[in-house]
Length: 240
Length: 225
Image (cartoon, rainbow over all chains, first blue to last red; front, top):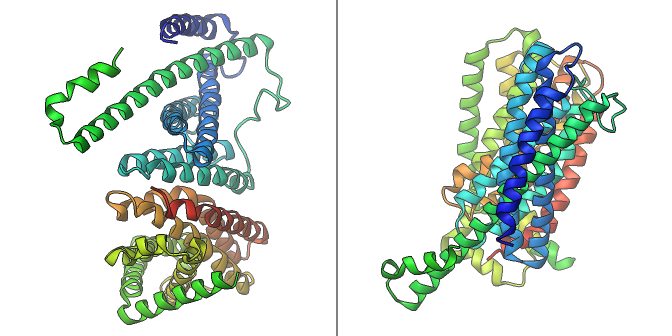
């Protein structure tokens, strides 16, 4: 497993470089929007990756509540954190693209608002995890993740009732996307997914290590020996 | 089922009696929302026409903020003398505890709304152009929407550091669709601008979904260790 990590890192770096080249050079320039449309190759893959990570977070949260497996909880934390980062990229690139194309930075349209609310819910999830440092944190966070997932369809319907400005999804929404653009988009999505997976993986290992260290500290203070004197030992054991 | 009702009613009566004697939550909530009303009317000073458009938002934001004051005190009382721990080890069903707390908060916030609504009408010169009776289901469903999640998240934030700050941080993002429905429904009714049916149905859905979720998950939260 550990051997796989550097290999995957190299593959991801190569993919990201190739995707960048494809998006900036190979992809045809859009007729009406011009070069600014190229932000599409970052905006959309980030959104898909963020939604995928939030979905994994939900599944991991439910699994944790059912099985009480600490690894599911670690996976949930990791997906929420990385998902918030990708969701932030979506929310930042969106206005940059919207300003020259729509003439406005932001509009309370259904997809924008749903994404923003999703981001808010997951930020509150991370705040809850930060503010609660007891053993109950995983349960409380998992419950919040379920509430958040229930909330999202309601947000969607409440905004959908207003007029929508955002274009229909180009994939599966009946839109006509140039096949070359679709190709670049999918390569970018693959690169972003690999990158997200890589970040999640190292963060997941970090999370498990951190928990191991905390556990070792707790055991040591239970055993009555000096934590400070032996603090280096568990650290040394869990590093590679 | 009988024991669920018995415990619910007993807890509810106990809470209402305690609140009636101290009036802590009620007084702080009333004064807080009075302050919000006064500050809002300084800040906006609208004409009668404008106030119809914005009153929905002002009213519900004021009630949302004031409700948080009461919701924060929901469980704090049970922490003294380890009452909550006693609850956990007792055979009383967890959901009846939750229901009693939620219904108690519902009474409190409804009372607040009943007292504050006339003040809003006076300060903002409100006169409804639509069917004003529709405001009653909006108020009832909206209050339950705030209170059911508020009670639940208050139980979650109880386990965190600086829990008074934590409650709004958890409650507000989840409450966005409910708040939007209340505000839109109120605006439509006040301005006589079509029908508010969609928003009332959405509120009802929100209430059903989150009441079910709270009842399904409250035991997990109460016994979280």
